[in-house]
Length: 136
Image (cartoon, rainbow, N blue to C red; front, top):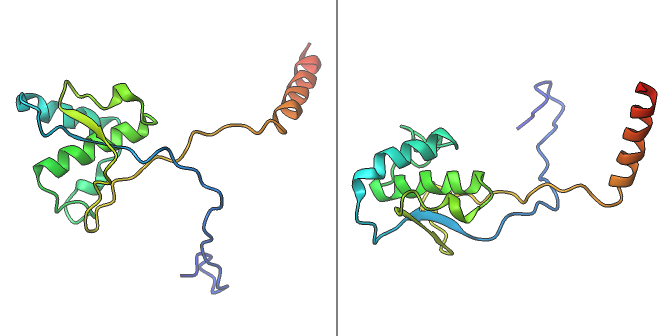
């Protein structure tokens, strides 16, 4: 696919050295008993993450109810950088090491947290110090 739109045969290039968080996913707890809270928790998870893949015609629209809940919970969990507290949903969810992806539906893992290289940081500090000095 030519991404320039001008016939220049320019293509996407894969990113290098991408780091991901550990292989952990958030799923509906099969032992959850109070499913009356499920709809509100799925709504919360999708409000603060991206559940568009669950929509009609999308890659995950063929999941069952358990898969839908797990997908929503996992998206929220990943957006929260796999923070343990972000996979509870009033006791309805649990963390698993099993990849929940199925068919065309990919249960993502968040890319690693961004950190500034120790080689770059001193230069930024000097630059900011000079800028502050100019303001004074």
